[in-house]
Length: 266
Image 1: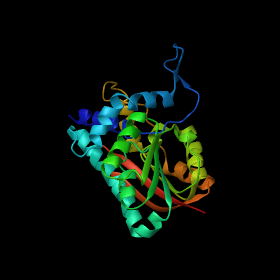
Image 2: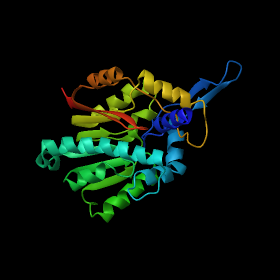
Image 3: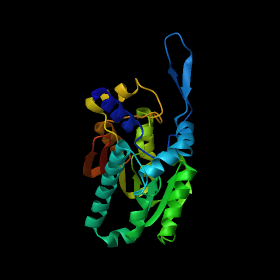
């Protein structure tokens, strides 16, 4: 029973997010010493998954009335807690500062963060690499009468442009390999005038062990490749992009682990 729980936990870490994936040439990994390298295209894999089976799975998880199993319910709870922590920051800053600025939500999924921001008066420009996710977010916003406050589009992260007071990228970095993470943070920093809000799966010995254990059991619970990041590396990337951390939080449930960092321009 314990081994099954560890496998579920590791698999849940691997399926943490609805992402923008890195736009980069495929990486080649050695499958074995004797075999030829296997080329991995993270971006294509993630886009394909979240436009198909991944959409069905995560749309249920991110819907309060969606039918889910116990593990998926725990992930829904964990992701909801991360979103609630961001909204608590927003509320503590005052609605006036929110309504006067612009917010870019990169990797918006089905609008879990973008929609409550729009309900609080923010002007939100949100996007996701998966058209199915962005379309669902747009539908949900329209049903709530928020179409004038929140816009949704299909885009990878590298295509994002413009300037926004705040840029958020929540539960997305798990799809970025460590060598691409700093570039991703740097690009987001380039379109953020005042603030960046990021979350990532922390690279600790415990989470790393769960991830490695889960990789021993490939199957339908596995989604896309997952990457953990040390907090030190993320803070360094933020510093190089011209940002310093101002607030942090950690969310940890049975099957969901996410470090949240708010950083302001120096």
